[in-house]
Image 1 (tube, helix red, strand yellow):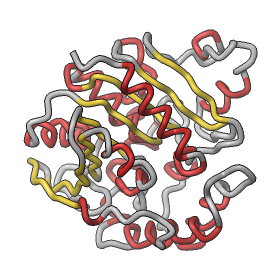
Image 2: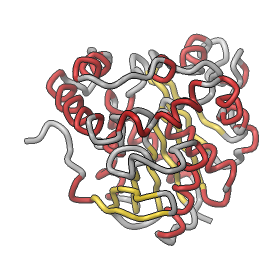
Image 3: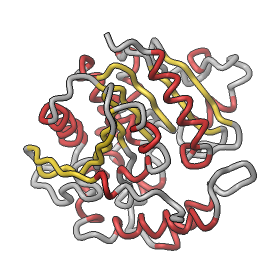
Image 4: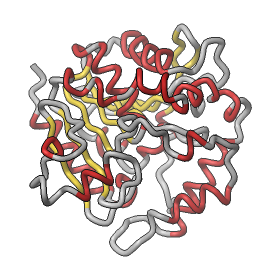
Length: 294
């Protein structure tokens, strides 16, 4: 039996103005959009443990952002925040999808949050897993952007192996190997530089921060992160969890949307959806089901 799910049988491609978008599609019912995070090695495969389970209930679409994975890697204009967000908006329009329940991981909620802010009619509900893009300071992977090695990927995956986690050394190794394939594709490293430059430049980064848009995102939202998350405001929210009685809006980093729910998962890290896949999946389903389609 394969250690990790293979989503290739769901693979499709769609042309948009700036290039081609690779995506996975399966299921029927209400439309659910999955948006992955940042990195030359990161793709829609990050939802490998959620995709098929969600597709048993919903019509699920998981694209690679423009500039990532098997989508167009080298773009004449980007990838940038605007190109990625506009690409998803055009992508949804071409598929005839008018409203989605959006689930994002890491930078996925950052891009998805900008989409929800700019086109609120497109996003029925918003789920952020280990959300990035709220802190002024970039993470090390952005500020010190460099080509990816197998050693780096294995080391980064090792943090998800701990008592209680569903991740094993064998699974982590398989995921690292699959990520390395994407990281070594032509244009993978060079192609992302326009976006990295935006994320690493404090002045430009401030213009796109998710925290500035949260007060205007009135759709129901669910925020999931691990107790040992390393991306702010996760660490601060975790540290202040008991003092705020589970309400980050009462803490020192009150970067919240008006209709948000908050779940901190003990022991988990940034890849909480790999470490506790069933719990995260059930949280997402319960939340989606609580949001009416009309």
